[in-house]
Image 1 (tube, rainbow, N blue to C red):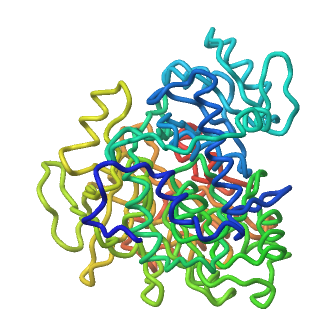
Image 2: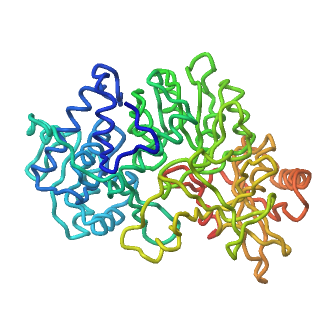
Length: 517
């Protein structure tokens, strides 16, 4: 029976909820990774076995385990198995160096690490740096004297666990580390109920997911975005998921779109840009897409329009965050306004405020605050930053937006990225969107730099489709082009042509690195 929003019981375990929902789908495909498939019946068994394995290794309820895992079938088994046992899984970015893992090991006080074989050497180095010893479970290899294989941990507990941990809906369930451009990552602490609400408020009504869908997410499971895309949402409706361990590139994505024929695809703007520019872009007739989703950064209007026209399906640009777990502001199928982030997802409230905390009027830039049931409780052991972000029922996003007359939200950049040029605020995102409208521009990033006299000037770093160009003539052409689309003071004072832009593991452009050039 489906639980209505107002009827979510106080005693609630998300993993048990998912297994119960899918008891009638034992033979249906749940996950397909690069090497094998797993049915819902097998998922149920393996989740219970993993939960039993944790307890057999002495891991207790509410203790943390670190998941340093590529996207394979073992990842959802470990995540759900931990939830089932009342243990707190902490999925982490698989592209980090050892010193980052060392920090997370100590900060989380992890009692076990589950790691993909390809990442084992880095994790061992991290344990040495952290001066820690603990059980290490390795996927994809036979157990050695120092580690336990994932399969051995499961097979050692054939009787499984029948009874899930009796957790509260608001009990700490899992952490996600929020990456930032400065300082150590923050551990956002989420509950069992948070997972439920993202599926009920966004996955089902906005995406319209059903058990007939096959989903594929370029964003990985260790990200809040990917966790909802490839685990929470499909499992909440009995759909199937394609998992990919390797990094998302146009070639790797095209291979899965052609081979597996997913109906839903989740990407990020930089990936959509690269896909459209690729010579082997599939034709609409070669794929089965009915809907695409974009998040992570604002999707340029031109990219959304071109991708939608090519594949004949909407691309829903949305905004989510690690702190809110998934998307709370989104476009809708049939009502897409490219160049905007859409309207609030039902169940969430938005406010735009000025520097004094007062509401801003329509058409003006303000800091975005969100209220909704999927918000994290806090950042672990960081009271100062918790207070700054989690303000009563509201969460300060760190993003600036403009609300237009029709109720659509237009991204104006991160709060710390806004520029003041000639005494007037300039949104780098607005300038980037204007540049992206030129046919010669593949991608770009706009930052502000001091001119040595304390004045800020805008500099655009631009990647062109054709690398063979007259730089002087192209710079003049692009500046003139921007002036025709924006008010004069917003045009970039300098344009630098580059071969590529620095990006994070999630595909976000690292503007702070450009400011350092």
